[in-house]
Length: 109
Length: 117
Image (cartoon, rainbow over all chains, first blue to last red):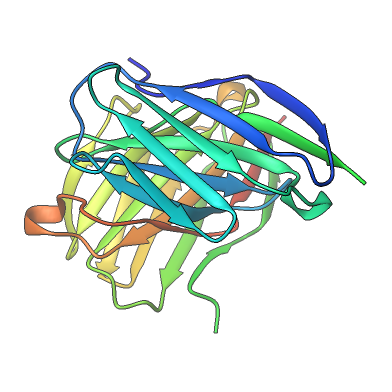
């Protein structure tokens, strides 16, 4: 069954605002990863957080992981029009990376 | 200097035909994957190969047959194509651990958009 579930399904904001996306999962994980997919393109890895980490930063990205609640959030600060894309969380169990359905982010200039 | 490449980018074919999609990675990774992304953007793993050995074979019709001639290539052959096979197929690679157990990130190709008429 599907592991990651992103919330919201779609998010529309103005440039400069922050965007927060959430991901919930069901079983224990080794790590959780966030990917971005621009329209008509492949997925690009953004950030990985291991199961023993609680927070990680990379540029304008901030990821949190709460293993007790089986949830993660991705925060994009000071969003830009170029951030418009679909964002997927993916959870790594023993040997399989399982993706959620994604959050579609639209950043308007 | 493309990391993971797939050909063709678009594939339009009739039901019942047989087609192949090719994937190559120049990252020196040990593990390669095929994913299927449906019209609702749900991405699901189909196969995983580590050093030419099949590691993961999810519930996929046996009309789909992956072939890995070497660890830099993983091709996907599909027999007797059906309407439901229409999707975007992504190849990916990663530096796998023991027997392909993933530890790190995956690098995706640009996708092959398959439309079965």
